[in-house]
Image (tube, rainbow, N blue to C red; front, side):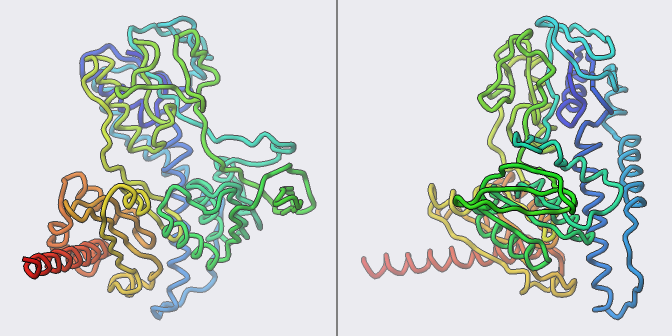
Length: 469
């Protein structure tokens, strides 16, 4: 087995293949860990933690604590980011397990390229031939193809700035753009966030999108939804000017830096997939079936390169599934299991399962909302913006979806995902005696309200049946 790419999908795949007894090689263009460790969740989460510390420090006066001269030394923060990335890399359990399992890891070998169906060659001249090959090369930020696009930055460039910019345009209001906007706004940057569609974080429940947009605006971020179409970028006295067209009228916006975060494409340009007989989709991702097999029977793919849920936990799972099927045959099919998704913005937002609109299209539902401004823990912490929404099937009482915006939203959604994976009814969830006062208590409150409404509806129906008889 040859695994190309050492991000979450690749490392999980290499470990699984080696555990199954396959002679396994793992090649990676750059460092072990891929984007997730070196340019993704780990560095981003470190910066988001710094933003959280700043926000909490600004609350100190409310609790009688005097703190003067609060400043951010960005160079020191970046040094901390590098330290965190290095420590995670040195302590990564996967690397120790992969080495112990006997898989051979080739790091920093440059881009890999198929030279025939079973052989790849890397930029530094390494050649590897294998019976089975697993593509886990990940994705990269999509670029705009307009005049002056070379003047813009990606999210990766934003993380490696030498100083906090005074102003910033963020083009793209999805998860990545929202995180860039939120983090740098907390650092003191004047941020304008542009979204071509009618709402930011459009993959979230509509109420979550609205709440995040409202909170962003309250924090000072200028949010422009349905802003039009970017025509060009050009250098300006402030730094960079974006020209865009809205309803036939030309407008512009200027800032020190423009960050483009308009989605992701597969990292396949240098692979020469044609030589391996691997086909791609219309969107440019590697096409896979339910077993993560490609159009070439000996080649599998996992993680962001397939264009599925482009998140580290899902990539880990995909790597395990793909390696299992590559070695043992089609044993494991991808299943539609609850997959929690969240973002460390301010406020945080998270989800698992169906949105309210999608649930109502297929089910008769009860929707229960617990508001943060009525929760003991959030009042104690002075962080009362947000809500926890549960969507429950009326007949089965199964939880169909959970959507949270506010402090520790990601943690709350994780609990809901566990309950959904365990097929707990909302009644059972409501009866779990969670600690008090905690953020998790909001989930219990929403579950209790849903249970009460379901019981009330059942009692009314029963009474009506008795009356009719």
